[in-house]
Image (tube, rainbow, N blue to C red; front, side, top):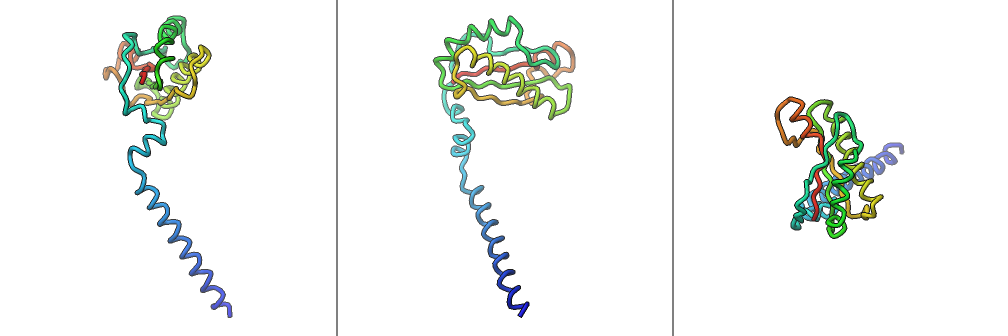
Length: 159
């Protein structure tokens, strides 16, 4: 009697595992790159980048994510162009010092600081996309203070 009870449960569990596995496979196989880009909010990558003739980088001090007066002045100059743009992409970057995880978090804090400033100035937060590359995309590959200073930045792109 016990054997008859256990067999249907075993078959049911096996059937459920097969169902879960096939669903997981179907989902990942059915998502195309364009769908993923749209879901991830990266549809602006398909559009043309707007040219502002302004410096598109905000630089930061070592291990800092706060804006100084010069940075705020640059961002103020961006406001008319930003308000016309459909999407604002803010890329946070760091120098090579620090762990990968720390630098990704610091790059994000830097980009969020720029975003917060723009939102306070009236830019809709819905059109701002924040991404952090940490130390992965340096402008300068040298290991000295000058190169590190150029790599500690947020890049602004308008679409």
